[in-house]
Image (tube, rainbow, N blue to C red):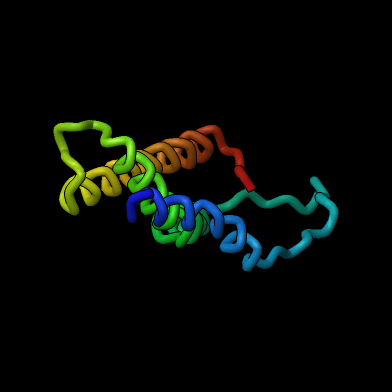
Length: 114
């Protein structure tokens, strides 16, 4: 087994441990009489914390970049450090665009996603 395949298997083995370090807060029951939709600043702050600068977005890009690097897709980018960087940037940009469109459509519709 080569180093790349071993590193990928090791990363996949320890990936669930990364998720277990998160903490969650249980919200009280939803009361529609007290509901107040998010304003623009609150939406931007949530987008920044959850999508734009979140560690999960970076980990996703690193992991998917490594997987796609191992598959050598697209092969024109090669299995080099530069090819991995392009794959990682491509994954990050795709996730960032998808999440941003999702958040903006929710704002246009006037709904809160969380």
